[in-house]
Length: 237
Image 1 (tube, rainbow, N blue to C red):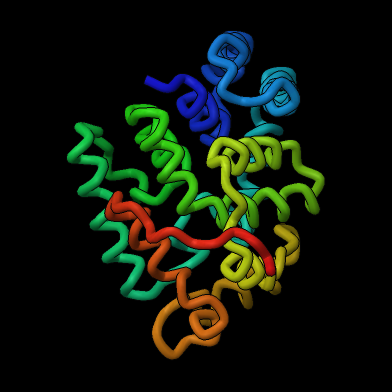
Image 2 (image 1 turned 90 degrees about the vertical axis):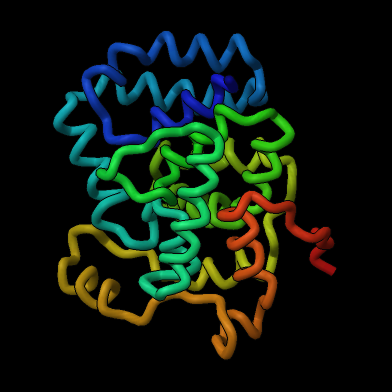
């Protein structure tokens, strides 16, 4: 088991009293495994310490504002590439099958592409396999990290840590498309309604995003199926 992924999964989950009580233990696990750099462990540790020190209701409210009321910060991977299209359903099925093959029994309360669940799955894999799966989602983690950093949220440290763990540069074309998604104000209810009514972000045949970066849909399908993605250049040239 890779403890670092389990710790990051716990941090990105809804804050609970159990998470607060386990904060020091989780920080110790990160420091013992040393899969993350010292700076990354310090940033994630500061986030954990902050969650532990916060009033629980306040921590939960902040979490909801970030991840549940802001579509651009959704913790569901396929939300950012498939939206509500039928392609998302197929990707969900493939990912669920991947979990089942690994012996991971998930409940019905959460979708397979929920990032904490995805990280729980990665914690059961070899380090090389986990890194390969992270690489294919690195553009999503990078975009989320940028948005959280703009929002001034310490949760950015977790997404940045995931990009670092992938040991790869995110796909520039896909990342550029994701950067076009507007970061909503969770307190602007009218704007939130408009955001959820807009057409989904979808990288598929005939889509403008697909024309800009035709590899996007292939990358996400490889990730769901657990297949190795074809080699690709990471240079921006």
